[in-house]
Image: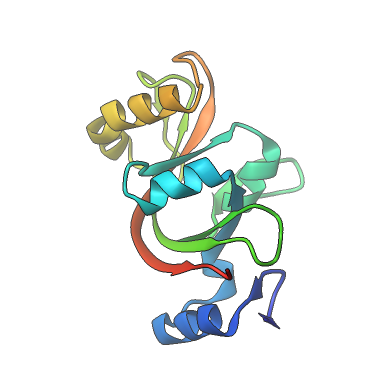
Length: 155
């Protein structure tokens, strides 16, 4: 495996990055449970959810010292890894957009998201959030996934 940032990549994954001209700062790296990984792989899960926490916000947006939102990071892809082991399976997917939702009827608009896009996908977001255990009144970040570009397994 080669290491060219904080994300260790196999030679094959690095070749995909090179072929698609992907820069490390365009990739959001997330670990997920295998069951969710499998649903994304088989096409039944189109949205990855994260709690509305500073940790996740700092992965997708830039903030000043006073924690004021400055703008989105230049993310175009999400590298999902099913587990924490270096040989865990991975998916490289296109990153469509994110939505900060404090309830599905009241999405917030920040950076990469347009409320009209969320409204168009509201039913899908609400359905997926419910499957993952979020209640309608919960706050969360919905990361809408695009096409799978690469699937990697080591076994």
